[in-house]
Amino acid sequence: MSQMPQQAAPAKCPSCAEPVEPGDLFCGACGHDLSVVPAPPQDHPTLTMTGSAAPGDGVEWPAADPDGSGAPPEVHLPTDLPGTDSADTPLPGHAAVPAQPPGSGVRFDRPAEPEEYPLQAPDPRVAEAPAAEEEPAQVCVACRSGRVDSDGYCENCGHAQPRERDHMERESGPVAAVSDRGLRHHRNEDAFSVGHTALPDGTPVTLAIVCDGVSSATRPDDASLAASQAAGDTLLAALPRGTHPQAAMHEAIVAASQAVNALAEEPATAREHAPHQNAPACTIVGAVVASGLLIVGWVGDSRAYWVPDDRSAPPARLTEDDSWAAQMVAAGLMSEAEAYADERAHAITGWLGADAYELEPHTAAFKPDRPGVVVVCTDGLWNYAETAGEMAEVVPEDAAARPLHSARVLVGHALDGGGHDNVTVAVVPFPAPPQGAVSA
Image (cartoon, rainbow, N blue to C red; front, side, top):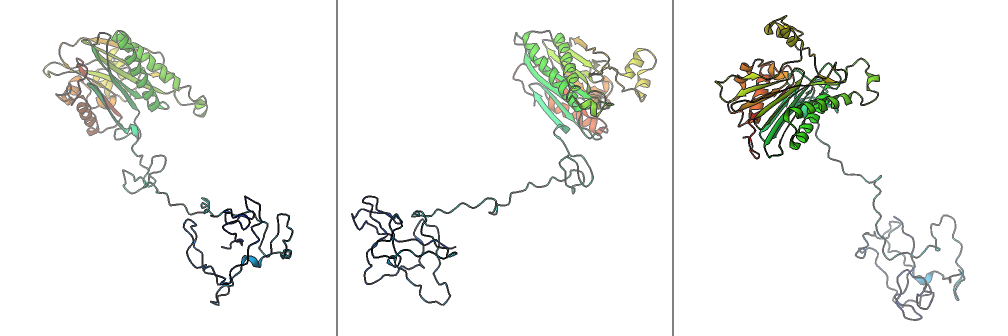
């Protein structure tokens, strides 16, 4: 690129011999005009322009050969240019600077130039940016060829891809739970909460909450999640204060109901866009094991089963469904087999939600006389092990010692049976092991 011409300056002031910097027009000590340079010696040395720049310049300068003839460049000395003082008055012995023709490209009124010219940073809008590493496209788990779009569906076969809630597992001390989307549903509308704490006297307490979203309602997955979290948090707060476990269970179900009711108000315009949809709803079932007591609470058709370690002792179902089938059996209008064979069997008559007829939390207290486990589950499991005897057959014998493994086995049993619904299972050992006990 072209460079502006630069006048040379002596290393020392000719008047006072003080050092001066290259490019200075006047001496800083005496004010002498440095553009007046003594006549050069007779040898007229020529500066070679083809050498490399001084260290730090960062610029390679090409040899000067404007016409391509190969002739040595013409040398211009500082004395060839007339000088002026600060008022542009010609110095003695020098003619005035002739006016430069328009377009000459040369100016002598430029400010002093620095010794070094730092290189300007490249313009980020112009400089070529390094190619960003693109994340590899997610491949469909079903067809193994289609690309997955931002909504989580395959662009080739339309298959929904696994989501975070499609399969969940959790342990909390001696209690564990597993939830799975199943093989037929496009999302998991179940949720759970497990935990362990202690009573004021230090007695260990374990708990599990399982919720099943009502598919015919809007946002069933949000409803089950809100209910399970609210109920679990309420129990973990109430039990260490000394609240009786059965009263704490009642409070937990009420808190869960309030959490689901609140979803009907968020957002405010939800009902305007979907006026014919039911409010968010879910069922709930929970178990608390504390100080020799087994407390269960429920609303809907999710269930709790008692399975003793001694399989010669009878197992038991601890809950009664809020369902059409259960009402038919209770009224003596149908046998249990006939009622549950009817297509209306799983129509629930009790649930948590803003459009529920009336909240009627069910709670019950038991005092088992031997060790065992409580299986807390949604109908995604008990559809494949409906009676207490059938449930006891599929619960591993070491369930109390390995609750997480047992929950996995029970979910696998439902999937092997067809997995028509979401499946959620919590396994709670009875009695509650001492604090610090961890399942294998």
